[in-house]
Length: 105
Image (tube, rainbow, N blue to C red; front, side, top):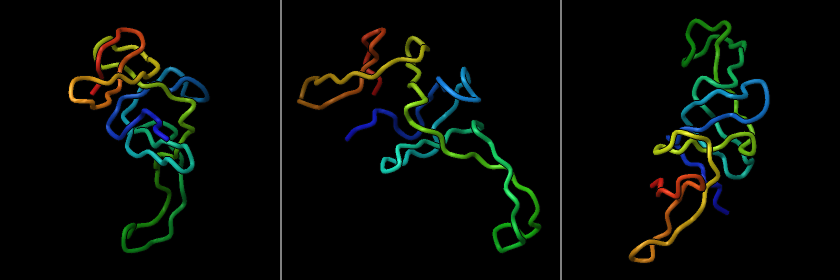
């Protein structure tokens, strides 16, 4: 199953607390259907001192949100869009913008 959203894509949040904000995808989890977006859905977590967090204390980090709550932002028309598939020369499948019909990658 292809979700259409990949790492390093720019997405717009369509629902929830961060509705209307854009961000870059850091990680996609296909099994749970969640994405991690840079500076979106930031939570505070209490950490004990360890090797990775020598100081410990309260750290801020991004939490994953449902992939159904985000839409890909087309790099050509800069609008949130649905993703289509097109087969180009050589039989390779590419993602396309449903609004401007341009190939995304």
